[in-house]
Image 1 (cartoon, rainbow, N blue to C red):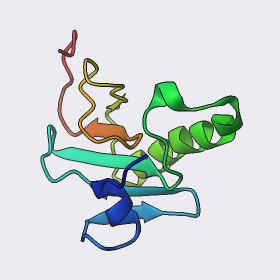
Image 2: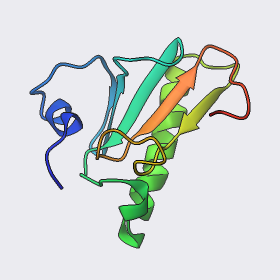
Image 3: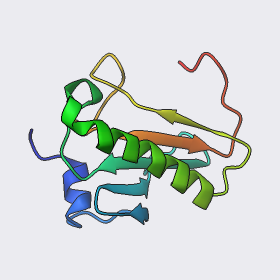
Length: 113
């Protein structure tokens, strides 16, 4: 895996508006928000995309979803929110580091895109 902007954010080489951090994950506000609340949750372990995760990553994947829940509560997204994982080029992934988008504070239409 080549280094990405997310790796640089984890190492604090690039500033970010960090809203949550623990030993396994980091959450920060998206610089190009698609909703009033748009937070990215990333694993500190460099996994390129969801499809490249392994069985050994099962606990980490669950931790990322529980981090979404924790951050959503912290952000008071009590009316609901959307969680998105883009996978690969056709899935809309633009940074080669697994990340979950937490979108909230507006109505989310369906279908999404």
